[in-house]
Image (cartoon, rainbow, N blue to C red):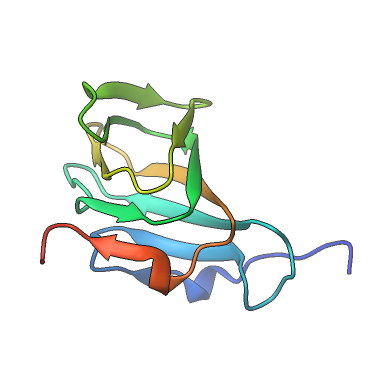
Length: 122
């Protein structure tokens, strides 16, 4: 199939405090990566977490935020920014705007629950 469209009704809320819509994942593809749309509501900071053995890229579609990765100083992010999160680095993002912060989360290799580590509830 050359065209697929995500089903908006399948968006779900996570313990990470954001909404996720899986666009391309291990369950419907044999691609070497996965793509999800993440939506963080105004004033919300996602949970500290890391993905072992997965490099993650955020492509900001809309909104503004403040990104923290590992021990490095945090930085502001906005539309059309691309953020690279190395494998096993702690990360979180805060929506500092008044509208939803929406971004694509692209994982290589594909995201799996087994690679996700919650760093707040350990």
